[in-house]
Length: 230
Image 1: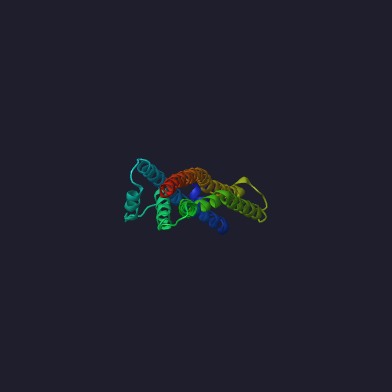
Image 2: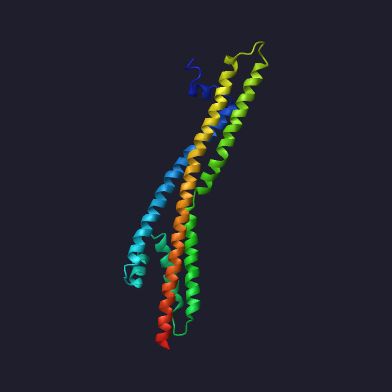
C-alpha cells in the first residue's frame, strides 16, 4: 500500500496534464532558489561595499584622490562608489572655467548622481519581479493541477459499477501532490521577495541620503569658493 501511494509513483502514474503542472512548478522552484541565492550574494556585497565606501568617504581624505582611485579601479565600482564617481565627474566637468553658476553645477551634479542611483537600483532589483510572480501564481497553478486530478478521478468512476475509495485515492493523492508542490514553490519565493525588497528599499534610502549629503557638501564648497572669488 505504501509503495502504491508513494509520491514518486503518484507522479509517474499521474495524467499528462498533472505531470506538466508538476514539471512547471519544479522548474519554477529551481529557478527561484537560484535567484534567491544570487540576490543574497548581490545584496550582501552591496551592503559591504556601502559600508567600506562610507568609511572611506567620511574619513576626511581628499575627494579628488578618492575619485582618481575609483576611476582607476579596473574591477569596476558599484553602489555608493558609482554614485559618487558619477556625481564628482560631472561636478568637475561643470565647474571648469572662470564663469560658472554654482546652482547649475549643483543641479547637474545631483542629476548625474540620480541617474547613477537609478542604474544601481535596477541592478539590485533584478529577479525580484520573477520571485513575486512565482510566489503569487504557483498556488493557483498547483490548484489547477489539483482540480484536474480530481476531475480525472471522478471521471474514472463513470466506467465502474461500484465506486470505492481505492479507485479515487490515487487521483486525489496526485491532485494533492500538485497543491503541495505549488506551495513548495510559492512560499520560499514570497519570503525571499519580501525580505529582499526590504533590503533593497533600505539600500535605496541609504543611497538617497548619500546623494543629499554629498550635494550639501558640494553646495557648501561652492559657496565658499564663490565668496573667495568675490
